[in-house]
Image 1: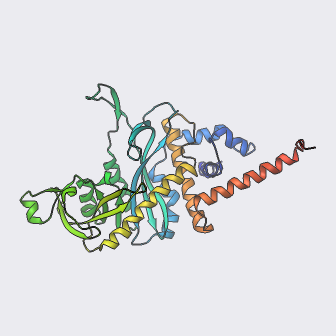
Image 2: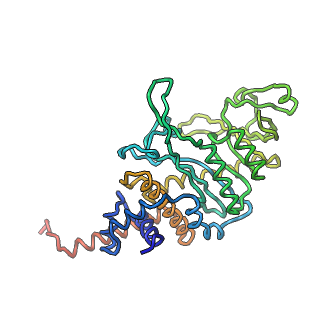
Image 3: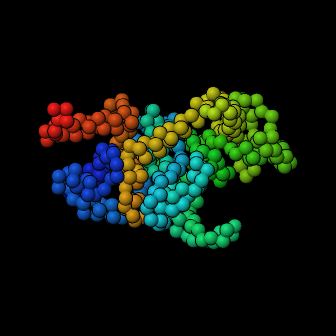
Amino acid sequence: MKNKELLDIYSDYLISAFGQTTGTGLAGLMGGSVSHDQIQRLLSKERLGSAELWQMVKSYVRQIQQEDGVIIIDDSIAEKPYTDENDIICWHYDHSQDRSVKGINFVTSLYHAGGYSLPVGFSIVAKTEYYVDKKDGKQKRRSPISKNAMYRDLLTTAQRNQIPFRYVLSDVWYSAAENMLFIKHDLGKDFIMPLKTNRKVALSEQAKRDGQWVRLDQLTLQANTCVEIYLESVDFPLLLLKQVFANEDGSIGIQYLVSSDTTLSPEQITTLYRKRWNVEPYHKSLKQNAALEKSPTQTVTTQSNHLFAALCAYIKLEWLRKTTKLNHFALKTKLYVAALHSAFATLQQFQPIQLAA
């Protein structure tokens, strides 16, 4: 059996499974037509990356692509608290939880067009360097490649693959001036991203030349209106939009969005940036519907290739969403109910004892 066929079977298994995913489990499910050793060899071969993912997803991207598509770049952590530490399964700071967690930190380039989202590239953070932390004197790991460098590489790959997009949407952690310059000048694209509240801005080109900088949280700005600003080390003006919203706990939240496209209205900036939130259900579905965190494999290569297979499983789920009009969780529920029906029918064949008799 060829590797592509095995990968298809394995990614289907990830969608169908409701617990840990193992080679032994899949072999049992297949009734011997696929062995544990075949799955182990599949996962242990050379690491599969963005180039191989593009070959898998290319034909589907071509069917949904639009000139006004967007590229969303974000990272997440697949938690692996009980797996031995290695170069990719290690400790990472999780901004959403405000603490360090053990797992695989990966960055995805997600293409969103026509209401559908497909991963078109990914990078795994590999902490292969050791250093001594001056604060606590402990030896720690770090990656020789920053996530900002991965960010730019993923965008370069998307453009090289001739994926049509107009805007790049990302979180505040990718709002470095170097990324902004790269998107505008090197790619010829525009971006919308938040700024931290302590970021210093100038309110005119003259103010920038004169060094008149002011922190965002010290500006008096009207909500939902745009003003033109300038950033240090960024050689073009940006539109700044102050968003005010109510959090789930009733508190008031403030977000400062900047757009390199200065022709946009506040409503257009808000509508476009709202598309960034498609990355959240993507991460959630990878973990809950594509068994991303359910592999007990131990090595860098097997865990990397399991992640690759989970991305393939997500692509299948997203295309099924297009053809069946059912979201990923509804599809998974249908599989679960079908499994229950099968289990119940099999149990009845065993003629279980009747306790009420």
